[in-house]
Image 1 (cartoon, helix red, strand yellow):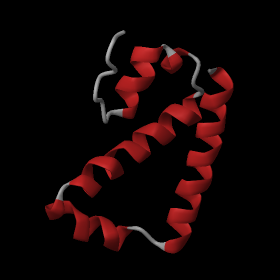
Image 2 (image 1 turned 45 degrees about the horizontal axis):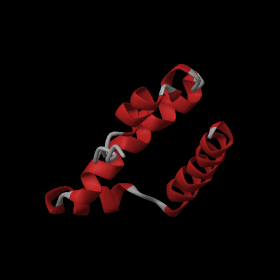
Image 3 (image 1 turned 30 degrees about the horizontal axis):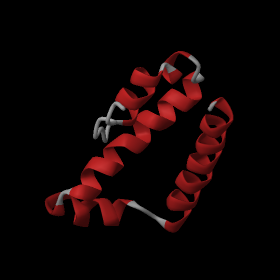
Image 4 (image 1 turned 45 degrees about the vertical axis):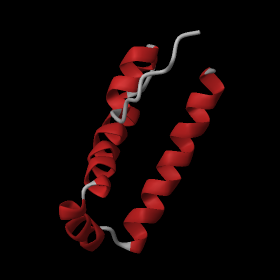
Length: 77
């Protein structure tokens, strides 16, 4: 059995699974917007700046779009 790679890049995951060719331009743009948040949240030096940039409304929008993308991906499995 092949062990899955530890990849944090959403773009690379989409590419390696072939989903990148099926994603809409809007979905690809969202991944591009979401990906830096993952990186910044993992490094303490970026966390404070990140926390200041995340309003309640922006977080709600991100969660909504993430749930929508997650459902789309589940339907592709």
